[in-house]
Image 1 (cartoon, helix red, strand yellow):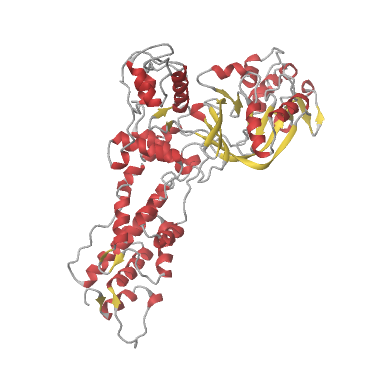
Image 2 (tube, one colour; image 1 turned 45 degrees about the horizontal axis):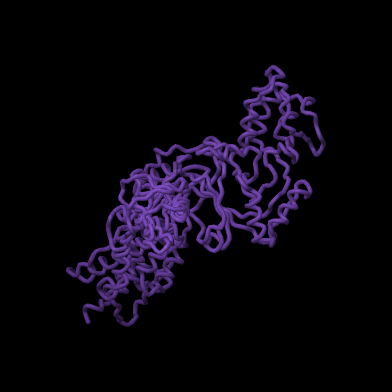
Length: 593
């Protein structure tokens, strides 16, 4: 009985620290359990900010004070005079934080509670254990949801417009209390996206540890061997057929030539290469051999995988049943329905100095034969210098000028005095329009969208960073077809009829908004366990790795691209009119919007 109960003298000393729980002077002697005494003591430590609570997040501490008050200081993790089985399960799971790309040293966990000493000493040790585990659980929940970098836009780059998908601490406490298995609940806090699970598997495989890192055995090709292509015969082709599940060709009663690289094998290789994100040429060289074997390329590090896992912690929990996504380092747009990619295409994205931002929004409108409204940044930085010199670039590129809804001749304006930001500069629809035949609007504060382009040749480039931030689509009419078929029930013939004979600036509103996700994943894991890396074109992977290492002072932050566009009027006051075409400026605009 003594192991379970503490005398009134101990309870009185505890209650004296918590006025709201004071007892009457003449109250009859009553006994409270050791675990409840520890709970009361833990609550008092939280309120005072002593012990492990001194280093705790303020919101976590406040949530725990309210949590223990609501349950009359009954502990969550203590059973009698020791840690409960539920507590032990939670501790064991948090200790495996490294398997999830987290840092286990971030969590202060209780050890086995020492049973020696006086009742008050045991009570204090139990209270410390209760408080430490509760705080560790809340911190784990925050980190599992991306809270190691609380403000990516402010801490890393304004182009990284993401937020950790945090759970309210009070909700975490309520849910883990109700959960029958604390370890399963903690695992469920991590992103449930399939790609996150694949990246985690790649991380475990790279580390070479744990039963969870074991993968389905696959047929492996020799890492070195000849180039395999259509018409070749080689023993490796037989292995290739097994690996890609390509049946042997049918023969005329003879033994099938399994070592022959035929058209069926080529088609399977091309499909695999596309899935793996490597050049889909249908030829099996050293790179394709490594991908087929699930080998991790040497340039892909643990830190790179973890940085990409961290980005998944910032993604919306529900991407949508039908959505559009653009992964910038791949220069690729995809349309996804029910988890399957139904369309993919090349895109052109922003220049290094004028980047495409990373964010999620909803597409609301498809516009055929659109006008181009020139943004202030291009007006000030690229059009105004030409106007100030008296150049005729506006007319050469069919740009129009309006002020308060009235057409204005740009040569009639004194640009050394006028503020171009107050003028509406636009380009009407037509063959030379920089937006081409269609644009896709998902209103956002970055003022970017997707659109067609007349400069199709740039899609043949390997690094396609040519725009001012918007995304240019190689086959936008096909994209419009998928979106409008899903939303409005349109068929391809209706899309083509709108393009051929529809009105200018024809806005087609979507009945149901389509989610759009701009992403920056430099490491992608495939279904077979292989991984592929893409160039860190904007440097965001490097920033995330530095932040996760606590090296915020080493991060090269961008200028705030959302800041208002300003210009120095005095810069243009003395500018001489040369009347010479400023071709370089407009090449940047019209070849790279």
